[in-house]
Image (cartoon, rainbow, N blue to C red; front, side):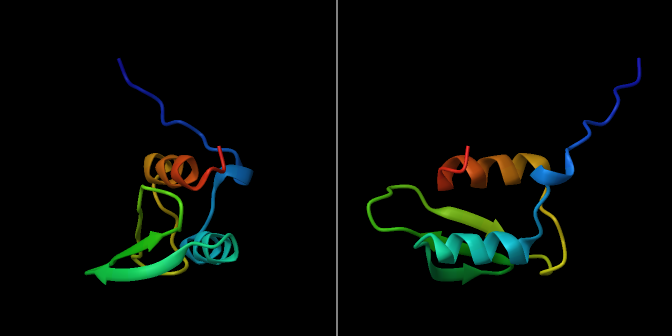
Amino acid sequence: MRLSRVRVPPSAQMKIKEIIKRLEAEGWKFVRQKGSHRIYKREGVAELIVLPDHGKGKEPSIGVLNDIMKKAGWK
């Protein structure tokens, strides 16, 4: 049995550059970077957001995007 890939609606796809812009606009601060992973923190929120930055024009995988959206309160 072959599993089909999940199609993501265009509205759910975001490039790294767009995610960074939105996070910073909503008060998330860039605190550090380890390799290609940018780490953001927001006052009053216990969790950190780890954003893999493998190029500003790239899109993160749907699982990583969902995790970021949940932690940022976008979902």
